[in-house]
Amino acid sequence: MDRMLSGLILLLALVYSAAASAQHDHHDEAHVKDGESVGVVDFRPDCAADSAETFNRGLALKHHMMYQQARETFRDLVEKDPDCAMAHWGVAATWFQPLWPERPDADALATGREAIERARKAGPGGEREHALIDAVGAFFADEDMGYGDRIDAWASGMAEAYSNHPEDHDIAALYALSRLVLGMRADTETRHELHDEAEAILAGVWEEENQHPGAIHYAIHATDVDGRAENALAMVEAYSDIAPSVPHALHMPSHIYVRLGEWDQVIEWNRRSADAARDHEVDDAISFHYIHALDYLVYGYLQKGEVDRAQAVQKEAEAVERHQPGFAAAFHAAAIPARIAVERRDWEKAGALEPRQPDYLPWDGSFWPEGLSWYARGLGAIHAGNGEAAQEAEARLATLRDRAKEAGEENFAIFIEVDRKILAGWSEHEQGNADSAIRLMEAAAELEGTVDKNPITPGALYPPYEALGDLLLALDRPDEALAAYQAGDDIWPGRKNTLAGMQQAREQLAN
Image 1 (cartoon, rainbow, N blue to C red):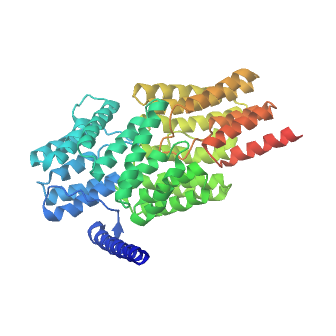
Image 2 (cartoon, one colour; image 1 turned 30 degrees about the vertical axis):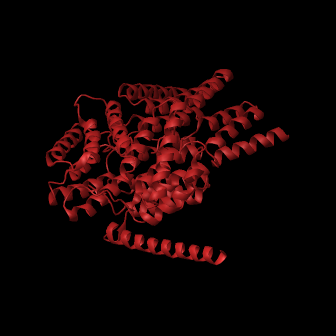
């Protein structure tokens, strides 16, 4: 019996080894182009036989959220195979980017709508393709819909597609993505349920295909929330192997490492991401993936206390002649100098920051990014004893908050209001109103807990619990300050200023 069992184990090992080798050869042959691996997508569209590889590559890039590069790939396929309905679907599907804060303008909506019409005229192959085309088509269907309604329509279409094709890896991954997007604006309990569902679905896809880019990428987003980060570590470690030259893929692991306070890892991954992104130009500008990685890189250096390196990265960002215009570039262009000033408690530099720079970026619709500059300016003004400038900054934050609400951007309005409350709390403290100051800081912390961190940012310029701890120390209440810092560290482990505050509170308690 033992000999039979040993023989069976050996046989299974040989079969597994042969299958793994064959699978590896297939991946290298079918999914690598020009030396750049993007992972494994095997959608099998109803197109010409030689179009499948190009489509799979475009869909993989879309899963990596390299939307411009995916669009170029799908457009090339449309030129080559105009009867491929899913090529037209791919073009349309890159014109909205669900987890990103970018919003398609009227031209993008018209282009997406036209691509869906062409997909339908080309004739989708089977119900599976019809379902995906209908889901994306729902996003573009009505010219007068708001962005939130468009996302709801797409998510509803993905729910129907998934209910009919739960075994399809790409439909499952995109459905899970739709759950995460809905969770970004759901109440706390529903948000957790949506993340649970998405995480379970993506884990199932990954178990069946551990090189699927959507499974890994969206799973990182599913676990980039309080208390979940360790769930994605196995996937994180696999990501660089499947897409070693894709900038956003190289950046994504740092979402988890920020949550864990692993600053060396944050720095390593984002340096690699930024270096890769320099080779990706969009309309004569450097891809926003470059400055996105640089902001995370600055954050990592600051948490290690390596200020000179953070400032060198700031100069690197400022030396770029033109970043790809959009919300992302505006956010990071504002965040990097504000982050360095506020983290260093360099209030003079914070108070001197100039909003809406560089001026070629789309500031009129970038309420939250502009708010970062005013927040830092206000903090600088308060610590310089300039109450008038602090009031101006707070008023600007209130205006930007209201404009975000009017635009339907409720989460952005919340982020701005959290910062405004912290600023108002420090103003109250300067006026000698301790109780009012504490209430405002506590309200900021409570409000922050109603939303998840947006994927665009590594973290707040000045988190509310850290601000509350600093306030309580200033009021000579170290026991309460320590509790505030500990609450902040539970959310964002390893922040340098939070840890320093905890140490100062302990020292005061010991004396």
